[in-house]
Length: 277
Image (cartoon, rainbow, N blue to C red; front, top):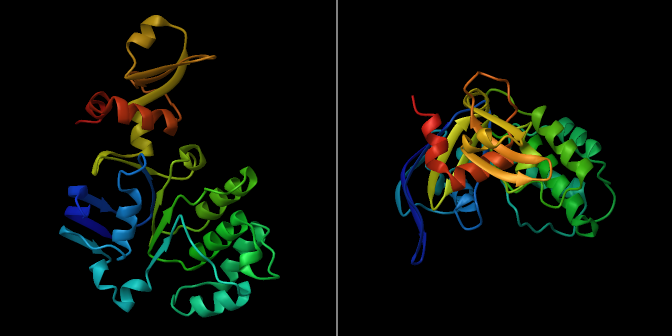
């Protein structure tokens, strides 16, 4: 599906990636986590063909994204964090765009906007930012792209809309598709994504599936000093010390993505050592 080999990119004199390697498979929802300026949006835009590698190679569905061939553009969709919608009705906007995507489903689009409670009347520019975001999400999912790239999709959504977003995404993926979601809102994706990618200083710091994370790590609260001392990562809270521990006894522990992300950033060697064969 996606193969990145020795990828390098820089903005003028500011290097972002140096020798990045990454492989993505269909049938998965990947969560791309990282701090501001680490290259998450740059990576998405490079996969979509908006930015060109300074070195290395990107292969998406057998295409080189920078060439932006029609057969490639029909199968890839990028939902950007920042966007501008024209002052036209939704129906006209959809009519103009849908023809570029052979697998676009009008039925699925209407099901999505109904779920998000989006009004069809009036100009798109008269809609709130949150409504515009939900409209774009509805369209992006109805495209049924082989590779769907989403940059901070839950920004601007209220709590109920975030819940609906998870439902819509979960019901949309099939084995032919790959979804890559860049986000800071890790809590919004805990029950959705099945593989975590953490990016830091232009490199992949962590790349593991949720099932493997559950097998290898335990996330718990404890006041026990001995248990705290054994933790790979810990932080204090009013309910006790929040801990990330090796899953020594094979317990069933639900991953806490926020804790995991902080642990990977601050204690990457300790965390990655647990996952070594």
